[in-house]
Length: 359
Image (cartoon, rainbow, N blue to C red; front, top):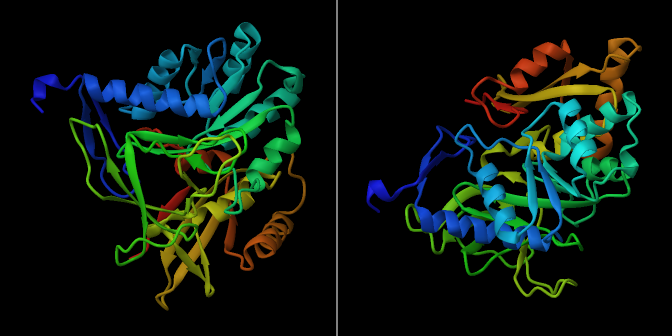
């Protein structure tokens, strides 16, 4: 592809290392728009809907641009609010009455908390759909996970949709209204699920997601290993779509933890923390112990109304971990502002909740 034909530059988020630069020509952007149009349609959006986008369109981020292109292609409307700032989000909802929001699911809990503290009747707002990005909402059996269930319990009037995407795929797989996994777009991508040796595993069995992009002109990829662990579902979906689907992600292959003999992926730890009411924010740090095993430390900030002694919160949180994961990591309590600086470094476009310091 001649360099002068590239009309947009983006980079990956650098989760698995240094960010990788990607370019898109006009055809690639049109492909992105088509992909997102299909994904939004799977989530039930149509002309007349208004989507409030609570993610960035700058910082070399492909997703925000892709969502904007897809909504235009669909014929719906979009409000580019950006991430954070609950006050601005609720002011926008009040002014423009969007029917759907798109954001990191855990931010919804912050929106709900702000609404409750400021007398906003969020359950009777215009919002009817929440489309989540970057965090899971379901377990492997497709039931709502702790985060998804907490949002549902607080806001039962809205329907939750999970998505899976990455810059390398130049694609997004969205759930339909039945929540039975993210629908693949087979005309845009080939998805294989493989074991450690690269052999394709049986349908329904977890493995690494390997993708081959179709129709990408500037930077096509052949059997690219994403590092994500999921399973392929081929059973019929009640929505009538015939494409196969992906289960919610178990986690990233390189982030797998072995804690006291139990295999855990960071999303399982996040799910417990996101569902604990007194946890204001957190970061999970994993190191190599002197014995060569994984040493996991969870650092949390407590909500302002937390009144019990710190050691009681630590004990309660460890009990929650044992209840859901069978094992408990170490827990430390730090000031909320200290954790916040770790979560949102200046150059990051995604919250940092997991730090891997293993040798």
